[in-house]
Image 1 (cartoon, rainbow, N blue to C red):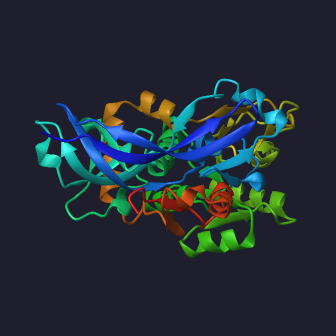
Image 2: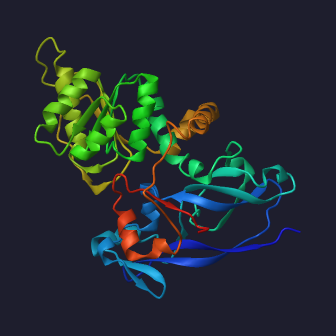
Image 3: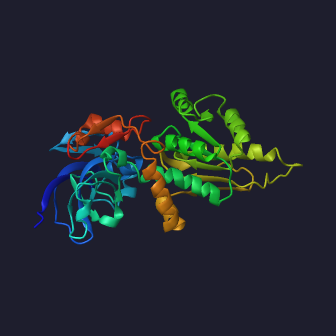
Length: 370
């Protein structure tokens, strides 16, 4: 009879006295039944989407160790948004990969195979899941190859699918030096889609040009507006995917697209061009308000969420994207990690401040079985 497994998992808790507490807790994984498998988790990235639950609204400068847990203070103005989270210990870690070590009677063929996982609670030594929910990787694949196959690759491909479905021919992407942004550069080059990459430093611009990006614009430069307009003029971009969210960047993108579109008007029109300028916000690197200055009447700002996209796309599209991701996991969809840390190391204040910064080139991989 298959035994119950005992392990550890990271949990994140918001308390009534405005503190965030991240702790390492004991877990038990019962034996898998029919259609189920148990995976030893060996690689799970810390994505911005993970940080929403892991560190939430904490002020990272206040991180400290108390009683074996990582504790930080939550600013008073951020607590109202946490009302429904108070007192709930959340299991964290959205995606990852590992080795199947137990399986239900109908899934024995999966024991010993490496699989990619999505389902939450993956900053844990073990995770039980329905077998149909995992992606089986080719024989010999390493866990790190499958750790980041669900969120960033499907998001990047989802941008391309959205562009095509809505009839655009080129796109803009912000915070474009991220792992996701680098994937998007490779996808667009392979698929022949003109791409404007907006970054925040000369170093990020150099990084993207080094992997073949043609149109890279630095938002920290004094001539940002002019170079953005030139890049949009060269590509014909009319859709943008914005990872920043807060501030005026979305408005600046619409403004630049409108300047280019207005050049095609035969005569002055006080309502601006009739070309639709679409901005989708899919991230919150800036958690502040999104500020839009009025720019004509043919523009739209909306949210873009991977879950919603997949629901609309349907199973055939999802299967097609999945196969491409698995086939190109070590090329188009390869992720780079600056460090691999254990569950215990994730509770160290200095390490937590580093992964919470979400810096380009500083993505961490958690191996719960270190």
